[in-house]
Length: 303
View (cartoon, one colour):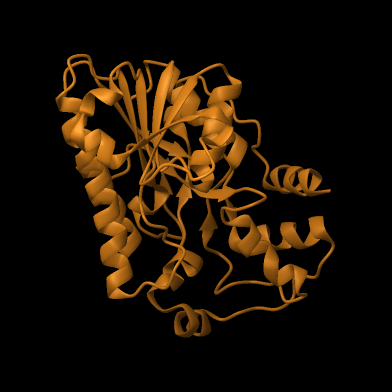
């Protein structure tokens, strides 16, 4: 397949590009500008301006993955939140306009989203049949991001997949380096109640799931990109400490987290217990189903 990836220069985008190319696919990265030192690993690069001026540059693409959007890993000022929303909705609209103008549109469009769309809950278990909910910023942003892609699903011949991504465990980026840092500094411990659910996914499983969605026509609609076995935050912390041989002893109360992180604290003290029903029913097999197994693999790679 020939696959275009918007947001292909980010952490997930780079890993997905590597995965798809290793599997024999042709990849085109959509970016704001051309790389100064030539195309990365020989990958073709299109700019948003090129697509706006001539949408036909996307002709021949069998699939498009939309990951574009400003990172949530920053202070949530009003300006930053507006940019997070604008960047996501604008990128999706540009791709929608381009696809509509093609004589032969791609057969599949995979829209990134997040499990935050369900809102936070310590007790409920969410699968793809669960209604989006929650009034917090991540939930509302995810709802708008998914809805922005609905028009693409109305284009004849285009299969729309909404990939609701959990906490990504990767060595270089994703949530793991942030979770690991306090333990390296001997200050790891329970965050808030510690009972909040952490629905995680190893980066290798995430990229494999994206490829699976692209290449399996039975996959359509919402897909929870989270490992089958979510863990409570306290258990996740203990596991990190055990694997890297650091103590899990320093609790940080929720009020302090709210004071330090502000509105962004919902990402730490809130949680969702998410299960990947759609992926597993479609036949996808997770390589990493145990969080300790996943963390040990990341540490093994680092050695």
